[in-house]
Image 1: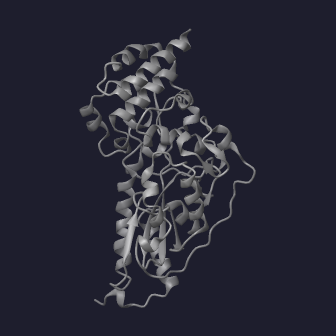
Image 2 (image 1 turned 180 degrees about the vertical axis):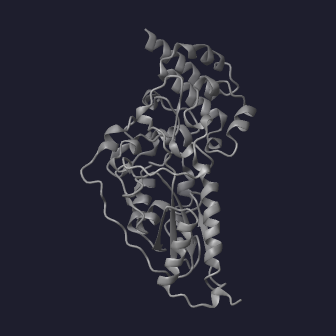
Length: 357
C-alpha cells in the first residue's frame, strides 16, 4: 500500500481533510490560523504588566514564548484550532437559588476537560501525520502550554472576543472548550469574524465583583473564577459577600450573554454533569476529610483547588446563604487543621449572625 505521505497534498486539500477529520472526531468547531504574531498578543503583554493576572505567575513566566510560536515549535507555520461544545441541558446559575447548595462553573460539572480534549486532539494529530512528510513536526495543547488559545481561535475564525473576554461563536455562544494543534506545514487559513457584541453590556452589568473594568478588559483579581480557583490564600473581605454561593468558578457573565440563548447541548457522556459536582450540597462538602476529598474529586477539575481551597469557598457560601443550620458545621470548622479554613469559617459565622440580626 502506498504511503499517503508521498502524495503532494495542496495546502487547500490538506486543510479540508484536517477539518473534516476534526469534525468526524467529534469536535464542533475547527479553524486554521497562521502561526504568526498577532496584535492581540500585544494587549496580552500590557494586561500582564497591569497586574491583572494576580497570582497566576505562570502566565508571566512564559510571556516571551506566548508571543512567539517559533519558541514553542520551531518552524511552526499553522495552528489548527478545535472547539468542543460543553453545554448541557441544565439551568443557568442565574436561575438557581437554593440556600443549601453551592454553585459550580458549568465546565467543571463532568470529567476533566483536558483529557477529553487531548484524546481527540491526539487522534487528529495521528491522522495528520499520515498525510504529511515525516519531516513535519507538531505539538498539541489544551490550556496547558505557552499558547494564547483565545488569540489563535480568533485568528482562525472560530469567534470574536466578547466584552466579557470570552470567545463567542454565533452558533455555540461561549460554551465551548479549545485545543490547538501546531504544525510546521503551510495550510490555507480562515479569516477572523467581526465583533457581534454591538452596544450590549449585560456581562459588565451583571458581574457581582465588577471584574470587567471596561469592555474587553478583565481584572482577574476581582473575578469569582479566579478568587475561588486560582487564588490560594484568603479571599479579600470586599469580595466575600459578592461571591454569593459560588464555590468553584463562575458563569454569570456567560449566563446573561444573548449569544448563549440559542443553546445546542452536548450528548458526550464525558461532559455530562455528575450529581456531586453540578450543584453540590454545602453541608456534605463541609465535612470532607482530605481522603474523602481525593476519592470524590479525583480526575475532576476540583483537584486544582484542593480541599483547603474548596472548603474555604464552602465557608463563604454558607455564610452568604443565610441558613442557620450551617452554624454547627461552621463551628466545627473553627478547629480544622487548615488555618485558611478556620479563618473563613469564623467570617461565615459572623456573616450568618449579621443576617439574623
